[in-house]
Amino acid sequence: MLRRLQQAANLLGGGLFLTLFVVFIVQIVARFGFNKPLPWTDEAAVILYVWVILWAAAAVVPEREHVVFDLVWNSVGYRARQAMRIVGNLLVGGLALVAIPASWDYVHFMNREGSPVLGISFMWIFLPFVLLLIALVIRCSWAIWNSVLGIGLETELRL
Image (cartoon, rainbow, N blue to C red):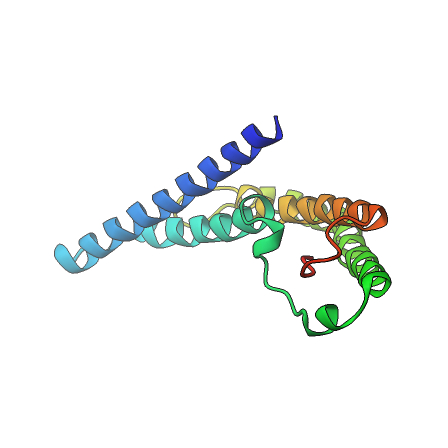
């Protein structure tokens, strides 16, 4: 089940990126090939870029692929790593958890306004940010649980 969800998330991320690429090519051809820039392509490219980046960070990029600072992590023992991982994930996950209600309120409030050219509600444009916060809470909770069990402490830290 989890594998199918990951495949679906990857497919959606790939589809978003492919759509961004196609819109970008259309924009270049219209602007430089026909000397007729299309306003919708600029807006669509920006919206798709926001979605691609936030969706990838929330659902596609595995935890082990995120950038980490591990000089201290690699120089300390097992118990210190366990404490560092728990405290770090408590901070990140806790801040994300606290930010979810206010972020959702703002994103929901933006439902009243639409993008200038395409008219897409800003709620749908910025919704992936809330999804990113939820994913952070879930990932941090899972990392804390694994740390308590002693899983993954002998390798590099991955927040």
